[in-house]
Image 1 (cartoon, rainbow, N blue to C red):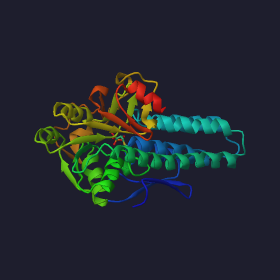
Image 2: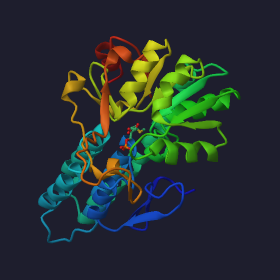
Image 3: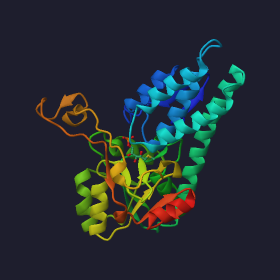
Image 4: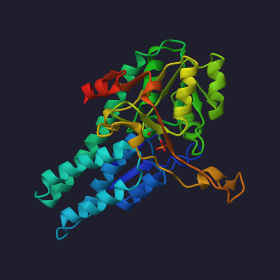
Length: 341
Ligand code: MRU
């Protein structure tokens, strides 16, 4: 498999995650608008991967400007288009802000130097994300014991990052350490990232994985079949409240009820230190047809009213620890997370 996202001959190429696991096809972008659409349509998804895509979107957009163009206004147009794609993923804004700083520092250099510097920054961001996930994996594996039965929700794997994954990074590193590890992947209605992506990824790495529907988790915990939960995050406020795929909060409440540890694995770039608590995290509401339909077919009456929040917020009190690339943070998170800043 090629990487989740790559820069190749002035194109940004990403695996089309909407088509997996049935088809392994690639979405090629030759301008920033195609990158923005790829993020909106969820060709690429997962907060860190969205951040890398946005950085490449800036690189690609600026690659196409001419000597006579106004650089600052071209940059602003590209930036504002990309920042409107997905509101919850903190890494999107983090990556855009980082690209903006590089632009501001280099905007008066020759056009080819400016283009090159922006591209190099996007490539550096991709490389860093991979290394960050490997560090998260290695810290996280210290929390896992042989024989663990691990529930994960959505896909926080190689597909959701530049590679290796956050929650799946913890699982990958644990599987290297111990052989008796089994993963329970919840299907993750309505977009099915668990069923389509997590199962595909783990099976390719020969990591034992069992697919369950979202509503089976509580019963399996109650019967002792699940011993820990690890998920990714889209945005974490400074007090540790965590926005992640809809259904994460349910899993956290069930874990607490059943005395099972609930871990969040995320890079520091997912933490929004400006937000005091989870109430301030914007929650994306997606197309109602994602709920009404299964593929192209309606599973309900076509005009039914629908709610489709893509994320929920798990209060910090339900989170046993947050695994970052700098170490493991525990409550009170406003203190432990700020020490990693
Ligand atoms: O809507 P998605 O598929 O982008 O949501 C993804 C998640 O909720 C992930 O758990 C999160 O972004 C972390 S990915 C390492």
